[in-house]
Image 1 (spheres, rainbow, N blue to C red):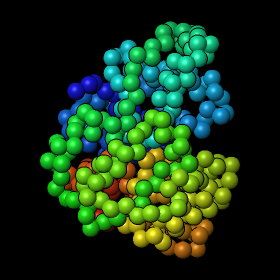
Image 2: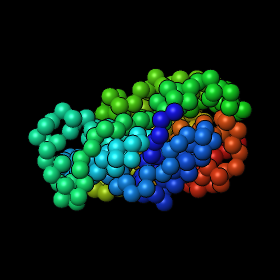
Image 3: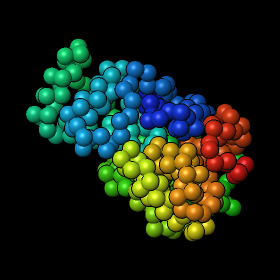
Image 4: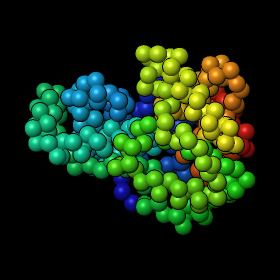
Amino acid sequence: MKNYFLFDTLIQREKTAPMILAARKLIELLNIDAPSFKGAKNDLGSEFMGLDRLKFLEHYAYNLTLAADEKRDILCFEQSSLISHAHTKDILLNDANLKFEIAERLQKHNVSLNLDVNVVSLEQLLLEEVGAEKLASLLKNPFGNFQTARFLGSNACRAKKYRKEDLLIQLLDLIKLKQIKHESTYESDGFEVFDASPLLAKKLGSKAMLDMFDNAADFVLVSDARSFIMFDFYQKELEKVSGRDIGLSVLSLAELLLLAFGETNKKAIGLDQHKVAITLI
């Protein structure tokens, strides 16, 4: 099996801590060589590219170089960091002028650009490296009695090139989890406008949550740290804006799989840090 760095420097770590803890716990359970990516620059979010493209590319090129120099691939367990790292590598490999400019910027900090590194999603690692057979052997608590609403958000179209949706579906089938149909799968969670207009952000978030709630989801499965923040940390505020109770648990893929594999210690995987209680165990 390959060597990785687990990219766990997510945004707003006090709000995304459950995602981080669960990812670390899952990697430990599967005996994958993926220590935390120490020294990596934190995730800015793919939307930052529209504000300062060169700064964005320099930021993630630094991480790519750091991992490449250590001969480790970058393992991303959420969508935004996956897009940002993979997109940066893609752009620089296909634009010689930009590559030269970013290399010069890094050189000022005594860093020599190195793009000899892969950026891998958690789903890809699980099914292409660990394998469905081993994962199936770990299954202790199938989710056959539950149905989830997958929320991919408005960044999902940007992510399609770098993450394989069929792999996620394979994993959900493996743990027997049903999926509901709902209209908000690819809509905004509101995060990208939160700083400019908190009220608009909460209206967008509540619209998506109510759609999933009204379609009888038992919980929401998110792919992005931003969605986790909006739907879990701010859910009470979404309820106030919409004038309705929601009370819908929010899980990341790592948390879901740990539950399916029999982990019941809520503190060990961060479930005790959720704002909305997890009632699946």
